Length: 346
Ligand code: NAD
Ligand code: DAU
Image (cartoon, rainbow, N blue to C red; front, top):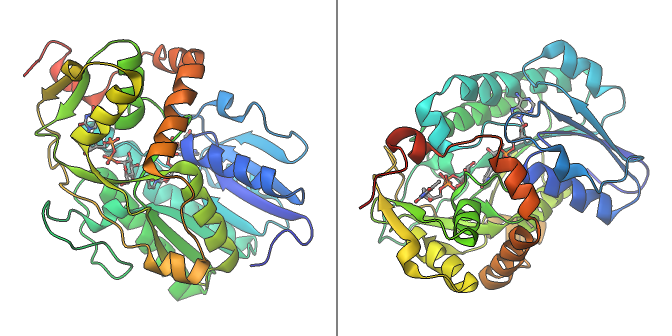
């Protein structure tokens, strides 16, 4: 799907969230010929502050829910070249507390978008998925997730994203819809809602508050800087072949404890701020992505190292204390606090 030769109209869902807003920023910075409709329900995770600096001529925000067929149809308009679906309930801990909204948005919402793409003759549908659909690898093995790894989702969130992938696959197979699926690991960077581990660690540490570490802290995640993920999505959109799946990872496995210690060290804070707490139920032990296909076929490679990405991320949170304050005063409580209160210590 060659782009940027003439005016390109894209429909991005969930673009007021963490990754979607980074994707829009990247795209608008990259070329002048792209116009984006950003369709987002503004749930607790959607934030208009994330869109403040975007060119209003080329970025059109519409508040709407992807489960609402009429609203999606009305917003989609004619001549849209691609739908890029970021909209989702994205936090594993919340899905453990209640799965309802995950099923509605992540499964039903994806089907509504697929139907709308077919009805409106949209050329391409890109589903932003996750490595979590492939379950958990063992801590000390050297296995990696590949595009042909089996589905084995372990949390309600992961199960809902796996179901969404199946629906995308079915739309391709049954109706010939031109689809791409990208699966990524743990993103980090500016504007990530501070219920997620890394921004929670940074914002807690900045306020000399402790960082909750689930279980023994040895769980491994494969971290990627958000802009590197977004560049991979863009390349997959442009160069991927219809029906393809791409695993996106920066070959950057880290134990949670190591991530938290890196944050504390970068801020000159003591390791005594680490607080081991009760584990997440069903906590996946290790994620590790083999990105060979994306590297070979898309010519993609990450730009940021763990050190440079973490530096940029921490600086952003230091310089945007008001963003964090406004987000947190939305009276959110982490899963850990909701389950166990704030008094439990190890
Ligand atoms: P986020 O929670 O920061 O943002 C989600 C956005 O979707 C918000 O702006 C929210 O308002 C919007 N949204 C939620 N429900 C909606 C609905 N029903 N209709 C319209 N908009 C709705 O999420 P994120 O971290 O930016 O993740 C974006 C996508 O990437 C998700 O699909 C997620 O599964 C996937 N993903 C995330 C990561 C990660 O590390 N964060 C990794 C791999 C894949
Ligand atoms: O792998 C991709 C996935 O990464 C995405 O699909 C999800 O949308 C995204 O939320 C993320 O899922 P995780 O569950 O891995 O992310 P989270 O930030 O919630 O947790 C990262 C790790 O840190 C995980 O092993 C749990 C642990 N953790 C988390 C929190 C919030 C803690 O130890 N303490 C915490 O307070």
